[in-house]
Amino acid sequence: MPAKHKNEFIRELAAAHGPTRALWQPGTRAALWFAAVLVVTTAAMLLRQEFRPGFFGQLVDHPMLLAEVASALALTVLAAYAALVNAVPGARMPRPAAAATWVAGALFAAGLVAEFTHLAPESSTLGARPHCWMEVFIYGAAGTWLLVVLARRGWVRFNWLHGAGYGIAAIVPSALMQLACMYEPVHNMVFHFLPAVPVIAVGYVLMRRLARQPG
Amino acid sequence: MNLAPLPVPPTLGASIACSARDGVSMAAITDFSRLSSLAQRAQTGDAAACEELLQELYDYVQSVLAARLGRIADLDDLVQECLLGMHRSLASYHPSRDIKPWIHAIIRYKVADHFRALARRKESPLHDEIETPPAPVEAAGHEGNGMLSRVDLRAIVNSLPEPLSRAVVLTKFEGHSTGEAARREGIAEAALRKRLSRAYGELARRVEKQMEAEENAS
Image 1 (cartoon, helix red, strand yellow):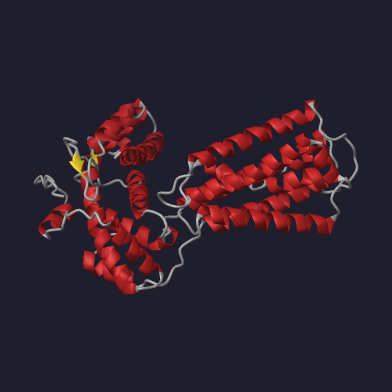
Image 2 (tube, rainbow over the protein chains, first blue to last red):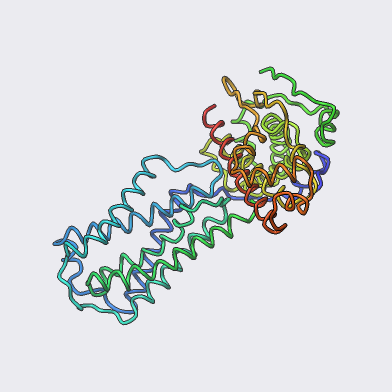
């Protein structure tokens, strides 16, 4: 773009100016995103089929299951927060929040491994859902899409870690599926968490595309 | 705060020479709270506040860029790109936050984009972008000990992996065409273009990182 004269440039820009509401703080938007995704995903899952009978009692009786689900949900909200902070020029994720994200990620990964060695509830086919993997994929993609919509009002810069954060939104339905579907470690891994991987990849690609758009 | 006048060598690119003739004020803007207040009013749709904000930002951004990059051929283009970016993403500024990091982040983004764009342009050799020697200057608006060194592009180019660095030196410093440079390197022209693209991507990343690190340190 050839440079215009300063005053002409400013006059043209000011003439085209209209009201623009300041975006809410990234923390507020991440919290709202999480609430919306949690409510809509839970409602959609309930509409399709009831949650596993006795899942609440299992959460109370088996702290490992509770820790696994809680760490997964904490990871999603913190990853969404990181992605939204990254879209605000000059903003920086507070150190405690960044540390909490890594801790939640580590706890979640440890929980996935521990399922095989220190099984939380008994393995059973109680509550099995016929297409749980498809539900995880569809609801996860919807959550990622919503996060991208929120982020694109800001100024997204490419960062592989935050790019993955867009996709980590996909594990909200995975975490809920641990309570809604049958509990069996191999089934959990293959049908509840594996379908989230392509959504994480999609989130990453979407971020790359967004990052190419000039602010 | 008095600023040392920027050196204006006779070989300056047309755009910055023109700016100097116009007597662009290099005075520091230290009142960021005023900029913040103007930005808030602009967000409500106040066109007069928007114009005032852009006027103040224009001089500020120009002085920061001149201080950080020294002599560059497209200074005015880059200033206007920064201003456009700030205008388009005004919504991303939250009134409860300090406006200075927001302004400087957008300047960094646009400088990095500028270097990425250079890779796609055959004209505009890189030596036009380099101010030597890279003496430290006090960037406008950086109070106190805000001494920011110029981004030393030559040093950054030299720090790139050797094949990438050579590709940049041959085509952008020595003025060879990509075909000639490829023959000298003994590789296909397409491979040399790929090296150049990687070199500029890396150059943009390193410039952005260096600017951010120095701004944080100041």
